Image 1 (cartoon, rainbow, N blue to C red):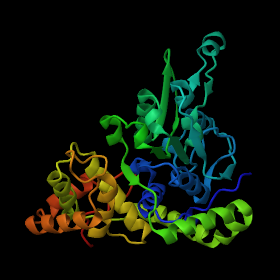
Image 2: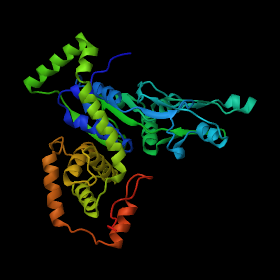
Image 3: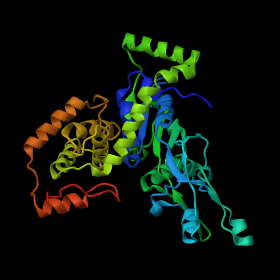
Image 4: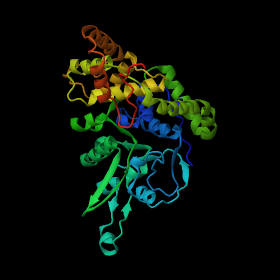
Length: 375
């Protein structure tokens, strides 16, 4: 088995690592697009993240990695076995890492139904695709800008829905498709269409490190890894386990993370002041801020959580002229949030505020904690 370069040994690129870790805490954020020069550890970071993630529990006879504790998301086969009263043994599996080739077709991605067998023998046979292999894992697309736009649409739709449904000639099959979507690209080779860019929840623009000491450190660590991969990974095992444990604990804490009406107003006002199209960025910032709070072991999001989330959600959504800067810094975002909070008042509290918070509470299935009064 190939030894993977440790995630915690990657030098610099803190924003990229933060975006990856937060998607690991909450895959429902919607993935991350990493744009940057060649040789800036984009693919290394994606592979390394999957290697440190906790194992997943599934059924020993399931081809799709269904979660035994989430029957509403089970595949068609698992639901049928459950209805028949079959006894099933659980098993633990490493977090899947699936690399999607640029030449992938629609059938290769979503899977195929054997119509001929269904007609001749009356049997439903589904051949899993990439989405099945990536369920509850990490789906990595290198050079995503070179992938067919239709295939990219399919991937983004599945990532948003968390389910893959294939229907042919009146026959249907469904299975869960919850994964961390990571796309990388070199802008010099062409960009994605704006519609597809917006579908990626987070985006990070990275470039080679200019600081001499850090560049030397990169060389030293890579030479040590090439000389003895196992010994190098062993030296970073403590840090890897600590980060893996933090991600696991953050996942458990995430449903408990609360937000207030004032937080929602701050996010909405920030997006409006930056003239961001649509509402996807607002939802992404809220989900990412909650994930960051959970990663730091807190049950309440703060202004800093919103700032760091906005720093990841806006780079590919801001409208820029030819002479405008490429990014908006965290400092600028925080200053703007402070100005907006000073210029707005918190919406009415009480029943209206509670109702609003419950209606806008994040992903289905999570506890609606926001806006509740103390008993």
